[in-house]
Image (cartoon, rainbow, N blue to C red; front, side, top):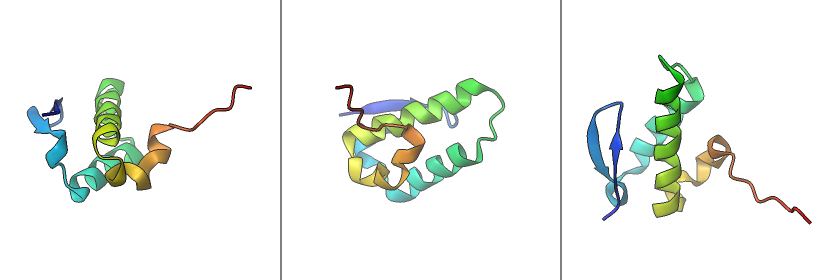
Length: 74
């Protein structure tokens, strides 16, 4: 079971149980970038990244927020 803590709500979340609407709300917060401090934004970013590793389909529309691009270093 993949679980993480959401500092915004102080809950432990099961990443396999997150719904598309939850990911959309998370992405909306990241897009608005209206956080009290940079650590809140970083926590949301890490949460979105964790979701991407467990359920990539949910995060696919928001990959631009993660800046996870394939780089050709050749």
